[in-house]
Image (cartoon, rainbow, N blue to C red; front, top):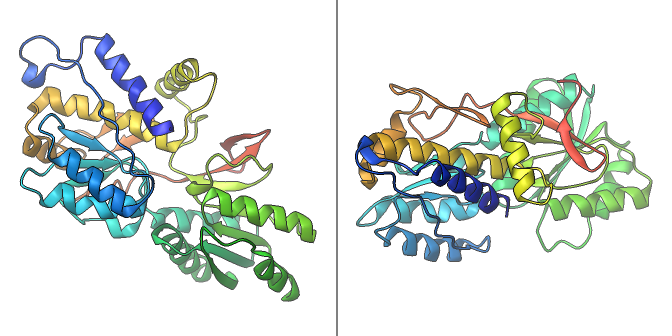
Length: 335
């Protein structure tokens, strides 16, 4: 929902200013969104990608939301008769890096998220013993591996690494076993939001008060004190971001944007700039994007500078740690 709302906001703003003028010629042309839902499933993502790649009016794709669907769709976009660029605001799996020359993303990978969570646990929380529960998919495994590698390298002791599925009904056995082993200084939840909420309810029932860290898939959780990594937080300083947050709130009943929405907003504006510079040819769009941050200037968006490397990643994008305070995610005061 945040992706769609923020992209629609950017489209309205650009069109209200006269649209885009491809190659700087003629009158401005309005941008339009064609919105399809992959339902978070790889098979649906392939069908959606096929429809969009075969639509000659589509010049680029904003998405997909998750790593699994992005990986499934990526080869469709890059290997069809008429390849089309995909730019994801939030698919963070390392496996997406370099999967196709037509695939880009504006968010850091799980390697950055896991490493930042590990550093925060040790340096800000003073944690030496950690437990980790991860969802057994591309996202969870990637975050688990990067956190574990950095935490151990820095001298931490990872007591357990336990897998779960989206259908897992209880995590209590994992939590009880951690308590039997003497407890931990921090519990890392490399899960989706629902799995994290389940773990937190069961921690309360067991009387466990360990600090909790999680990845950006926990965005939207409202449990006080939970900390999570993100590519973007709405309290990010700067006039441009403040204007975006205010406009988003006006358009969406006072709600604040998350990293998925902010990334989508930046992608629309970046694509508008590319269209104005090089026109609507799909190959020209891809070639222009591949040079952004290399021999063309980085794009300064509300999420920060977007500069792609040769694999379509944004390695310079920082990861920040947010804390839930009064139901809102704010930048942790220790940063």
